[in-house]
Length: 203
Image (cartoon, rainbow, N blue to C red; front, side, top):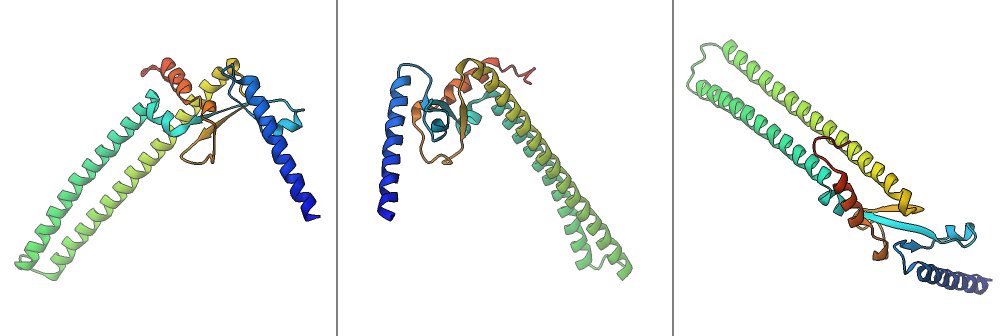
C-alpha cells in the first residue's frame, strides 16, 4: 500500500512538472509570465498568470516611499534633538543640586526634599514627553504605511486592467522559497508608480 502511494506521488509530481513546462512554452513569446499551480487543475488545466513584486526593492526605489522615509527620518531627528536639549537641561539642574547638597547650601532637610521633588517632577515630565513623541512617531509611521499600501494597490488595480494577472505576489526578504525571475515585474511597477508620482499631489 505504501509503495502504491509513493508511486502515485511520483506520477503526480511528474505530471505537474510536464504541466509547468507546457505552460511556460505557451507564454514564452509574451510578457505574460505564467506560472502553474495546483489551482490550475481545478480550472480545467488553464494556465494561471502569476507575477511577483519585490517589496524591499520597490520601497527603496519608489519616490513616494523615499519621500515618506526622509520625512520620518527628519521627524525622528527633530525628536532626538528636542529630547537631547531637555535632557541636558535636566542634567544641569541635577548637577547643580548635587553641588549645592555637597556644599551644604541647603539650610534644612525640607529644602533638600523640596529640590528633590522638583527634580523628580521634571524627570517624570521628560519621560511623558518622550512617550508622547514616540507615540506620535509610531502613529505617523502607521499612517504612512497605510497611505503607501493604498498607493501601490490603486496602481496595481489600474496596471492589471491591461496585464490581467490572476495573482500578483509580494516578495519580502526570503519569504518565497523559489520564484522564477521571469515572473518579476518589480521594475515595471516601480517605473509605473514613479511615472504617476507628483510630490505635491500624491494620493
